Image (tube, rainbow, N blue to C red):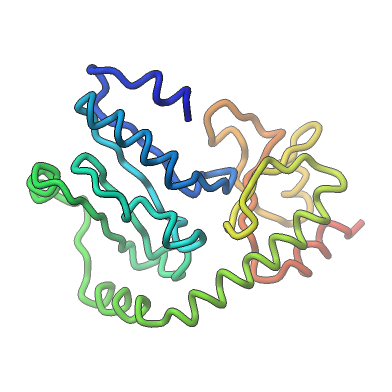
Length: 214
């Protein structure tokens, strides 16, 4: 985080951070986010914290808990709640100037009544979310144990539904040959296809079965 803070100047308009991080699945501590927000505020910059995978970390670790007028936190129903097709999410701001700015934003697509109703119902079903997070954690542990024997697994949090996996040669093509679709490393900054982002599947056993197939 020190590297980010050092680069914030009076010319900085905004800082974007995804937490949990995509593609590694790492989780920054709230204290680290707070330190960046404090420096950004002094320099007149906005801090955008993308918590698309926020349901997979502790509520206490969310930037929503911070009281800074320059923070904008975005959340999605596409990940933990499984409502990707509805294209719905929300943002939280606490500063008056930020609220005024957000109110002027013209969204590229409209939110349907069905999407709103489904999102509200999803928020009520915390039991589903708890089970999803727990199952994700168990499947991730199984996958990392298996893949760790032949691949490099980048540092990641045990509960997030993604992680970065690297090997020799074209790792993306390797998984594709096994019938497993991953996100190639070239989709991310400073990576090539020797790395892939893996999304935790519903069945770790089925994934491992494909890996072990001749």
